[in-house]
Image (tube, rainbow, N blue to C red; front, side, top):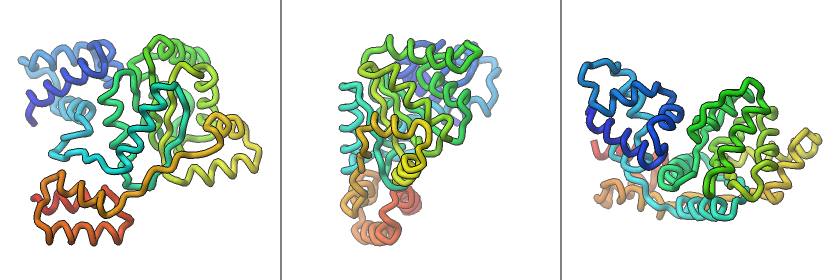
Length: 281
């Protein structure tokens, strides 16, 4: 591993995203002293290789990581514009895009490039884990013992930021218990913080089931979303071609082969990435 590269990544993360070593410590879930030692080059070899790899993974930018360049597909440009508008207007929207359309890459890249835009990768979490993950993303270590107090810590921190934006990726994976927090977060931060949710179209069926079953929180959340989802443009062959060209594939026969393969698999950009890397190797 090139430790100097990781040090440079860590410095950029602190300068562009965290703003301080203390905040970076919270966001990266690593001790302040460890960050300090790493920035000094770890002359005594106190930091384990595993920790170097972990920091490498956590600070690696979405664009250019592992020799992969982000290409501005139609979906990328569209989702970026939506996030810009939501951040500027402190709005609330849910972006729907199919698997492999570049949602996560676009969201991470946006958060890396824009001040006070915070990326949260969701999953099967309990409420305390969810609040802790939001806290980590904004660089706030939660100290309260009650869930309500933790929520208010997050709210107060976000209220102090200029044009904050929370980006919840794979938000459809959250349980109903955590889902209800979105309504509370919205209520406390309305007109003060933008909220963007991203997922596949499965959320549409889940929302309808929740509304039909009169499940707690669904009607309120649906109202705050404007009762509709924003559907991103699907990836097409032109996008696949641009991604290939932007990542070093210029041979027309190879391009045609990758595009043909992608077409058979709904133009999934993850599959395209694997094919491109295989061709380059």
